[in-house]
Length: 430
Image (tube, rainbow, N blue to C red; front, top):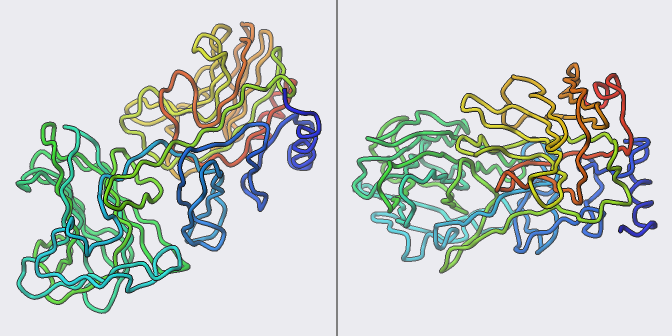
């Protein structure tokens, strides 16, 4: 059981924002999440994030990450990510022999990187038309791959071509990025390749673009050849002679979106999953009735996530008794649902697909023969038949039937040990 003095502290911190709640978090203000909170937040490795100045910094083991948008400097929330591995070696050292680089000169630590330190390499190509910066890695057949990198314009050249392909170059995906405008130009596939997404994150503090592109080579190849090279124009495979640009922190990972930077050396590096879990809920949780509010934003399109990504879950360490609020992948998009298993089910709160990088507030009320759910102020969907399940723990960004942590920002969480009315449910989710 949580010590009363600690519980009182957390109740006092959020009393003005969530009056009447027995537990609440707000990760959209300047308060830092505390490791000694009622829901411990842990991660067994270090991990990177953007601080309030828009610089990329490293969090220590078990240190929660209060992440900020590096362009607007607005707080995104508590950053939770799945376990990921950077498949590249020497991800921020292009002078190393692991990178093939014909007709290319590398000047190490020549430019200011996203961390504010001088740790970005200058890439300069010659005029032979054969230049590239390339690395091959072993993958699983049919894997969804995301390549990402920090890039910044130098003096010559506007376009970069980023490509992931089979060794032969016959199958894969690629895109052309404009260093002047900070936008993707053409994106396309080769052969049996599949293109899933491309994205850009701008760091206003350093003028660096974090670019990424996601796709599949084909269904059979087990080696991925990745390279980044200057191009003389959009959608052109010709190099621009004597072009140069700054580059750093390349990453190749399995998954449908880029995650936070993982720096490697001579070996691949794993970043552990972020975990927020507590099995000591009896001091603030009411088994008979209650109200849950969760606000979050996903950055993962989850095109192959099955069956869902959870915002929050309460369970008894099994999938037999639980409350869960989650994003369901329906093939044509995701839908937010709230469920009480072994009691009653609140149907899909809305049939509107959930968009990435969009903030959603979801409220859920449970009690004997009284369940309701609302999203962003919508008219509650109700279910008037069932008994709430008995649960023993709470998890953020995960529920026991999902099998994977979310790639998500948790922005707010509040719990009231009583049922709030439908009008109040609409109000707190607006």
